[in-house]
Image (cartoon, rainbow, N blue to C red; front, side, top):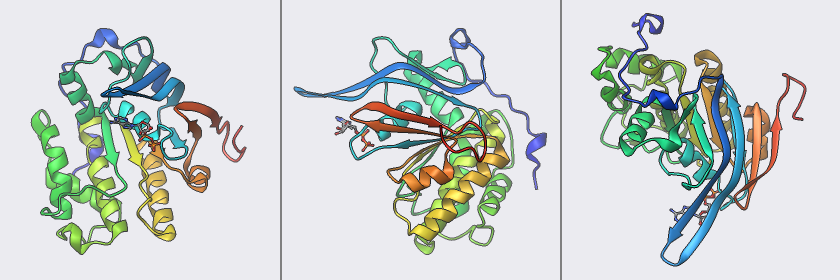
Amino acid sequence: MANRSNYIYDFEMNWDFTLIDKNNSAIEIKNLSKTYISGEVEVKALQDINLVVEQKERLVILGPSGAGKTTLLNLLGGITSPDKDGGVLKIFSSNIKKYSIKQLCEYRKNRIGFIFQFYNLFPALTAIENVVISIELLNKHLKLPLYEIATKYLEMVGLGDRLHHYPYQLSGGEQQRVAIARALAKIPFIGKEFILLCDEPTGNLDTDTGDIIIDLIIELNEKEDITCVLVSHNPSIADKFASQIIEIKNGRIEKNSKLIEKNEGFS
Ligand code: ADP
């Protein structure tokens, strides 16, 4: 089995390093807004967003349907662009707001893992093939053993005996585990400057399975030292999962509660 500590975290990013101003934050957002324009209709999905998330933190974004949660997640994932006027969107000290389309593509590949409510696995690929396909692109510069890495992460999520199952042969909870393994298997290629973005990851699961998935993400966050952002409309998930909670309503952060110290509760 390959040992992650032996891997070299070095790849050619072609990023504009003049945009980088190093500090410890994984995410730093200042005065950010996002307006969708479709035809005559303008929707201010996010307004005046300010937020700091340190590396290794677990942020939960709470709010009712239509509040702007997914829009914020998509901005962090480089899927949606924020409004051009003003504002800062720094990820690991680099202002991704100024990235070109090519840089955003590299960014998504090299910094972001996504977990969705409906898993989004390739139905014609087995569990291990679903993981391998996501890391194949990253293997251009580092010749790492893809199948060994995929196996390691599937074992880590408890699916060592389901490597060659197709999605239709797996339960919802197991499919979500494959999706988690698929996202995290990028880490040996990237290192800890990685953000796991989870959009309602338990929304399609029963409560017990959902709890197991949340416990698993917490365990992997602690083991792999990664930063996690999770969208939910369920406050009990936030209480269990978060080191920081933001509540969004009508596109604005109404409340930001940060856990100061373990067991102290939210301020
Ligand atoms: P949430 O995830 O909290 O349910 P969203 O971020 O999906 O909220 O949506 C926020 C607002 O932006 C909603 O009013 C929604 O209708 C609007 N919206 C989302 N995506 C688009 C889009 N691609 N084009 C136009 N409006 C959109």
